[in-house]
Image (tube, rainbow over all chains, first blue to last red; front, side, top):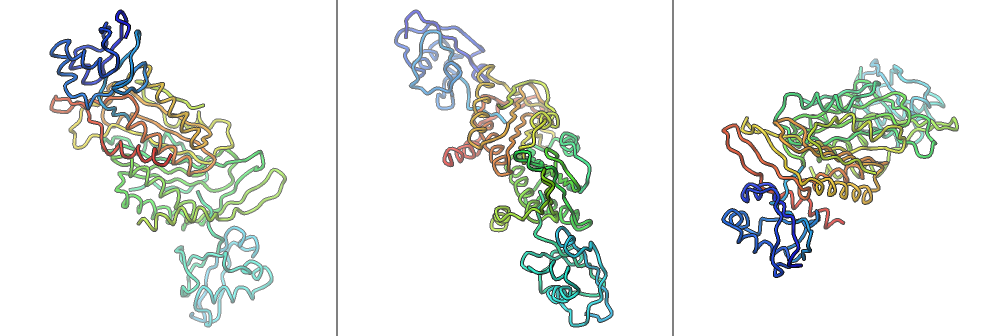
Length: 89
Length: 89
Length: 152
Length: 152
C-alpha cells in the first residue's frame, strides 16, 4: 500500500467494545497489502486490539462497504470495517 | 332411505344457475340410498336438472356441510349441497 | 385460538396484525399472505365470490385449527371475503404467528394452498365486454395442496 | 423499484401494504413477513440492533432489487429497524407483490433468509438480571440462506 496512505477503520458490535473505538484513522506501512496484513498489524497496536482480533475466524470484514476476504487488497483512502458475523432479521 | 323422508338440496355457482334453484326440498323414493342415487334421480326431474348434472365428474357434494363421496349414504333431513370444484383464495 | 371470518366488508391488514400481537412477547415471526383481485389488461370488471353459508366458515375454522396444531402456532388469522369485488380489492388474508420464522412461513403457505383448493368458494368473473364466466379450479392449485398431504 | 428503509421508528404494516398496492390492479398476491422481539419467560429486557450506516441500507436495496428480478415481482418493501427495541416490538418487515401467490411467498422467504444471514446488523440482548450479550450468528440461518444459493 502507498506508505503515506491513510485508512479509515470501523469497528462494530463486540469489536467496537473490545477495541474501545468505533472508528480510527490509521497509516499502516507499505508491507500491509491485504485485509489479513492489516489485521496482523492492528493486533500489534495494543492489548485491546490484540484481544479484539484474537480469534480471526469469527471476524468479518467489509472494504468500502462491500464484504471482503482476507486476500482483498487495500488502497489509500479505503474504509475498512471489522465486525462479527451478522445477526439481522 | 326412509320413503317419507325429505332432503334439503342446495346448489351453488353454475349448478345453481343451471337448475334455476338455490335450494329445494325433495322427497326421493326409498331406492335412493346414496349421493350417486340422488344425482341419478335428480337428473330425471327435468331438462334443467339433466343439464346441470350432465357431467357428474365435475360435480362435488357435501352432506350436512361435510365433503361427501358418491357412496355416502343419505338420511331423512340431510342437507345435501352440489357445487363445482371450489376456487377460493 | 384462531380468528376466522367470512365477510363482505374489506379487512384492515394493520389492524389484524395489531389484534394478533397485542400484549404478546412470545411471538418472533409472523407470516402473512394477502390475495387481491388481479386484472390483466383491463379485461376484468369484477369478481364475485359465492360461499356456502355455514359450511365455509366451519371449514376455515377447522383448517386454521389444524395449522395451529401442525405448526405449533402462537396464533392465526384467516379472513376471506365474499360478494362482488372490483380489481385491486382484497380477497383473503392469512396471518400465522410463531416463535420463529420457519413455522410462520410454512403455516402461511399451507393455509393459502388449502384456501385455494379446498375452501368452499366459487368465483365468477365479469368481463369488460359484458360477458361473465365461472372460474375453473386450477390443477396447479390441487398439486400445490397435495404437497402438504404427502408431507403430513 | 423496491422500497427499502433502515430506521429507528416503528413501521405501520397496513400503511406499507397500502403504499405498495395503491392504484394497482396487476397484483394477485402479497407475501409478507414481520419479525418481532421475542422474549421467553421475561428473561429479556431489550434488544439493541446496531447497523453499519450506509452499507446496511445499500445491501438491503441490492437484495430487494435481486428479489424483484429473480421472482419477477411487481413490487417489494423491506424495512429494518435499528436501535433499542423492547419485547413485542417490530424489527423487520418484508412485503413481496406478484401476480400469483407462489413467487410472492418464495420472494418473502428468500428475503427474510437473506436478512437473517447477510444483512449488516448486530444484536445485543439485555437481560432482566442486568447482564447483556451479543447474539451469535446461528448456523441454522446460514443453512436456510444457503438453500437459495443452491436453488439459484
